[in-house]
Length: 226
Image (cartoon, rainbow, N blue to C red; front, side, top):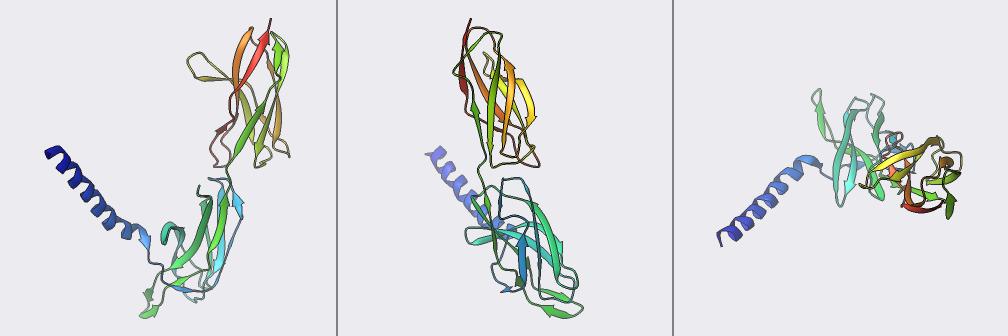
C-alpha cells in the first residue's frame, strides 16, 4: 500500500509541476493579427533551414518571437527584434510534425512611456515530409563479380550522399560502397564486389545532409553463388 500511495503522490506532483512549467514556456494566444509573414519553403525535411520574413505595424523596434503551435498553445522557437519599419527576419529549422504552424508574436510592451499592444502575424503552415531510401539489388550474383546497387531517395535532394552497407554477424554495419552523390532524380548507382557464397544482407544509407539526419533503407538479402 505504501508503494502504491507513493506512486500516486509522485504522479500528482508531476502533473502539478507540468501545470506550473507550461505557462512559462508558452505565450498567450491573444494579440491583434496584423502585418504579413512568408516562409522560405512550404514543405521540407525535418532539420532543413527555414526562414520567415514579414512585417508588423510598428514604428519602433520591438522584441518578437517566432512561435510554433502545438494544440491550442503557442511555444517560442527563436527570439529577435523588428526593425523600426516593422520588418522582421527570423530563422529556424523545420520541425518534425507532419504540418507545422508558425507565427511571429510581439507581446505588449511599454517603450519610452508609451504602451504598445500585443501583435501577431498571420499563421503560416509548413509541411514536414517523411524521407525515404530504397535499395535495389540483383536477385543473384557470383562471388568476386562486380555488381550494382541502385539507391533511390525521396524527396529529391540533388547531391545528397548515399552509401551501401553490409551487415556483420554481430548486427553492426560496414560501408562497402560509396558514398556517392545522388543525381537530379534522387538516385545513385553504387558498384560493389560480390562477397563469398551464401547470403549477405545489405542496406543503403542516406547520409546526414544540411541539418537532415541520416536515414536507412530496408535491408535487402543478396544470394551469392560460387
